[in-house]
Length: 148
Image 1 (cartoon, one colour):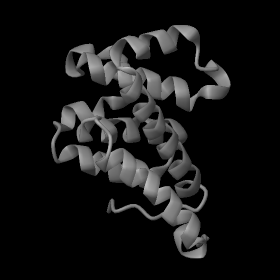
Image 2 (cartoon, rainbow, N blue to C red):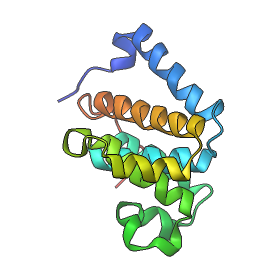
Image 3 (cartoon, rainbow, N blue to C red):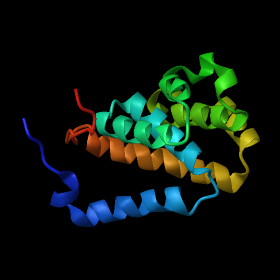
Image 4 (cartoon, helix red, strand yellow):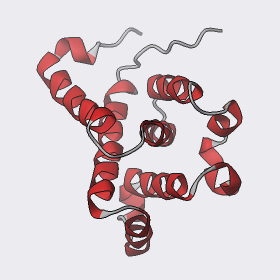
């Protein structure tokens, strides 16, 4: 079944969301690769095929295929991910699974130890933005670039 193209149906809402996307990809102190790493992990948790496809492709431009493939199990292969990447991925999982984790004090302390206050807020906005996009991409089944 063909579903609505959400950004065509509600262009003003799309413009607002894309404004947040532009902020996190162009105007934060977060490294671009870290942003896409967080985008990918959040999208994997939320099951958004379009975003998984898009951000995997973005990461493959600068990251080894081995590392990209192991993002879902990053905590089992710590030698592949930097301290900052592991902290960002842990916080991304904590914030994305908010109904389960309630952003625990332990997770907040760990994230705060790895990022200065401004960067931690920027990271959290990045996570929130991708969660918003996933909640549009998945229900409206945006088409992926992947071919059989």
